[in-house]
Length: 235
Image 1 (cartoon, rainbow, N blue to C red):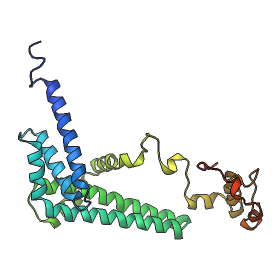
Image 2: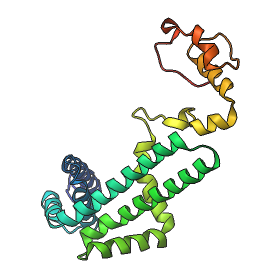
Image 3: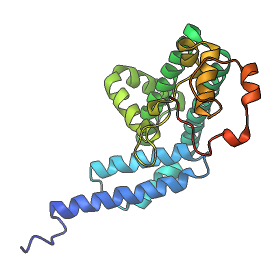
Image 4: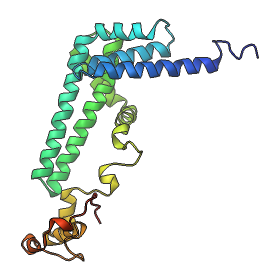
């Protein structure tokens, strides 16, 4: 019993580590708020967690902010590079949904997914490398690219864990297409235009049964009072 409240007890050590990680998470989130500092905030987080794993001792806050200051420039450049690259890919994806369909759409979307995975994979290695090693930023990028390809299974696992929170809603349910939502290209491949308009009209309570109908034929049936007040669910 005398060792139960010993600070060297494994239970206390585990609780201490959990508390340290919770504090680091809050500090990192606060440092990410200016957006441009996301890079150095994540670099400092990786550096501090690494020091915790090898038990170097010292204050975690002092370690974090020392790493934040010393890697501010390279971290900001790497972070902005990642944000701009991902933002560009998102814009490309939205444009594809507007202007492409069929096989061309599928091929280009797959290309965007591959490029997005590559950017996320490189950043997953690049930010920890910046925190742990003194090197030129170009060399960090080259090493991160090599590591992301050399250890591809680990890269896939890291990227999946990074994007996992984005794949789930706050209540834990799945989002978007996993919630029975379909892309316009898939709908066009499955239905003719009148069939698609008929299904949408049925979901909007504008017609009583699902029949093919053109927008011109539907226009006289339109009424604001018929539209449902809640969300529409695709049938």
